[in-house]
Image (tube, rainbow, N blue to C red; front, side):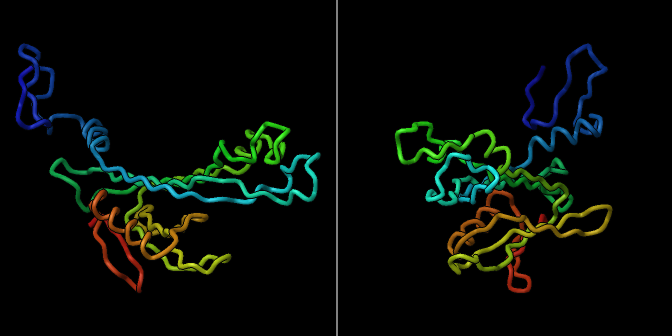
Length: 212
């Protein structure tokens, strides 16, 4: 097979005319699969903690041990598809995934009964009950919506997604996810632009990011 300067162009195998010679001759579903693999990927992680549900409390745990909060890791993954071979454009869409999963190394899972950290919580039971995993497709717009946390009144920003479903826009807020502080929000915003090539605007006082 001859090596070509354009990675999307091949001359096929000599004597086997059934093979496509150019990108345009590939079936559309195969073109789509290749372009989606050539898309962009953004990952953001944030350390968090959540209260362990009361129903998971071990029966032998003394009352004076209180209600523990388990360490968790929040993770946002945003993938941008690639609709056209020439590059990223307005027909691309985003897939946004959010997870908030318990850290299996959390001290509350200590199995040594002779230490103060021992609480007796079952790792699998806690993770199965508390782990959160969600995903949204066909996202065309992301907004960083201003708010405040309930416990310390620090500035916090939530993630609001606009999806295009059957020609109509649907707005979804990523519940449980937040970015604390304006400096962290700005760093997050810069990465969205640099890594996903999203266009940034300020709309109604909020940062808004779109594929075009």
